[in-house]
Image 1 (cartoon, rainbow, N blue to C red):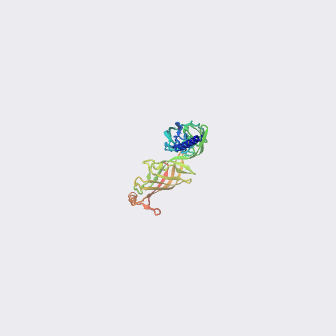
Image 2: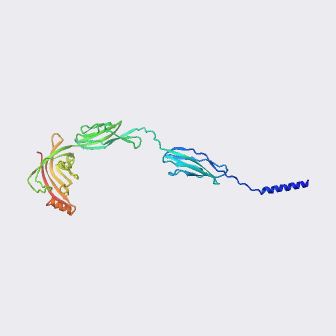
Image 3: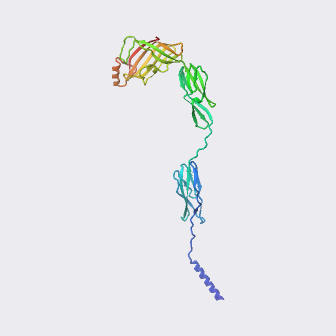
Length: 375
């Protein structure tokens, strides 16, 4: 019996030693698997987000997420640790995406999907609520008999920045004083007589106003009789010169006196217009005639300035819209030079010109005395 036990112990020890010498097999690494990602359809202007889901049979494996194919402008990003995808969408189109998940042993899985981005669909048209109208201009100055049109009437709505033009014919017009101004159905304002009036403009229950000021105005003509120096024709002295009537010109009543509505209309009543003509001529309440004009001579091509001073009277005819100017006035003429070449031209066109002491380059070239009277 003792012999049997000894043999059994020897066999057991041998078996233990044999097993301990066998090679150990390492655990097998299994690749992670991504849950299929569905294709997506989104609208531009929104943000696309998606949480990628992946599983690894090997408990404890750390997974890393990445994108191998993805939109670049703007860039789509994925959180390497969580698999969360974010992408701000700005461009329409179809975009492919490939997601890769990798475990610690280097094994990986990938999943592809597409994103279709559509344009923003327009929302329903807003209901527009008219809140007011705007008349342009807000003020208007005219002289009696003159007609001006209302430039525009604009409707404004509660939607910020939305407005539209209104045809004047769709508006209503009411005038506070028809003896001062009237307005046609098309928005033409006609001045009747001196004064002020308010024009009320209405459209679908909304209103705005236009303030009108009318000055008295008359159309005049006058004759002239003078011994004149005509610098353009180089005529000095001469016998009395009788002209055809000057004008017509429009005079606008101003603080008891008168002013020429447009001096240019007198100078250009006949012949070619002087393009660069400007100036202002007025008649005071006491009849002092004064003013100036400037232009470029069509003959010498030098700058010309003319100054006026005299004593006249405005006679208004019974119709109240026309009249004449009588009295006397003088017109002084000056030319301006800027170079030696200009002086040569000055001498050729205006003999006897005298340079003004107080203003270098300004030359007195003559004057004309006028006697104006009705005929």
